[in-house]
Amino acid sequence: MELLKKKIGILGAARSGTAAANKIKELGGEPFLSECKSENEIANSVQLLKKFNCEFGGHTKRLLQSDIIIVSPGVPLDIPILLEAKARKIELLNEIELGYLLKNPSSKIIAVTGSNGKSTTVSLIHHILHEAGFNSVLAGNIGTAFTSYPIEDQSIDFIVLELSSFQLELIEKFNPDVAVLLNIRPDHLNRYPNMITYAKTKFRLFKNQTQKDLAILNSDDLYINKLKNNIKSQIRYFSLTNEENISFQNNSIQYSKENISLENSKLKGPHNLANLMASILAVSQYKIDYKIIEHSLNTFQPLPHRMEFVDIIDDVTFINDSKATNTDAVKYALQSFKEPVRLIIGGAGKGEDYSILNPHIKKHVKKLYIIGEDREKMKKTFQKFADLELFLDFGKAIKTSFTEAKIDDVVILSPACASFDMFKNFEERGNRFKEIVGELS
Image 1 (cartoon, rainbow, N blue to C red):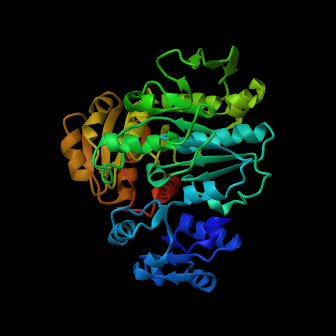
Image 2: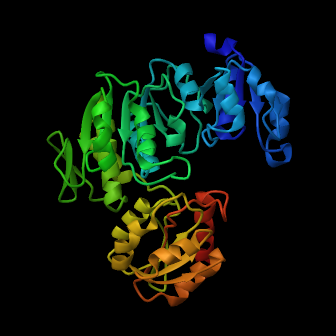
Image 3: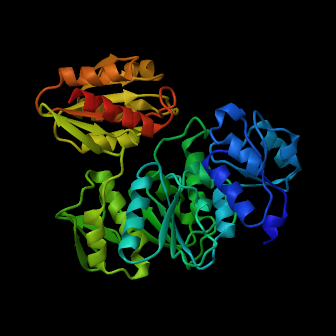
């Protein structure tokens, strides 16, 4: 392949960068890895040095000798080395674009983006395809890099991708057969100058689609409705409020004259109902029997850290919603309970306006237990709407919520923030929450 004959530099030696390097080498290329962290900060640096040409502790001019630079998704595109690369007209790609260029043409791609619900939706789509007998792989932002699979192999029927806005910034030729946009809510406003720029980045998912492709859209979403006229593919809609291509009535989903029961579904809350409808539409053109779809919806296990039931201790229910890293996710969490809520909230802010939550906090929350670096900002925003207390210690916040809880109260960790001020990631935060609840029991 012509691409592999070029000099390829990879900026970032984390999961996607390492997967891209491995795939390029496996197919006969010679990648150069450049990482800003020191060797001591990279757990597998010794193995990487044995396998690839590498530099650690910063990006030098060696990277600018590349014909192509593959940029890891967490790297801002305005850092000096990339600005110089652009000035030199060096082609910038990301791992998603690389995977698309290398994959076998026979494999179908179903790609999902949105501010909330991506991981649940891609996992559900993957589960439906697997139950229908297809060879499907699940990759992208959910945790496993696209290029870590044998994607050049024609035996893979479907590649289901979760894509963040960061992963959509550098795509050029990438074109999914089915593209799903779940919602666009305030998020990552510490990276994007405004909401419309963030929304347009999400819409890059549809950049290369044509009439032979399918777009799945949420017709309830303000920003989706503003920008949808730019889409050239076929469109199917889902909605929680209007009758669209698919609808919900009496604990079942109506689609294509079929009635798909959700009686045994473990996915709760209005946000998950939207995810269910989007998942059905995503597989709708692949002629899967509706009984298989119904069975899949009712056997799917919710993902960890997303409205995850943890325990009931002395009639107090504990819910781990650590993945709720923006206000919209917290709003849906609060709407999922009729019982009084004690909400553990806070962390590393992403530039959001927390006042969006005020009416929901006033309606559902008994007390707020505020943690993390944005705690003072949250205090000013919420103090007129609920009793609250600030904590420097995560464990103390959880233990205090339990001490103060009454029978039938629900304690939810739903932070509305990133975790990086106190934890490595949202998974570590959620796992620590579960450990402390385990100690309480």
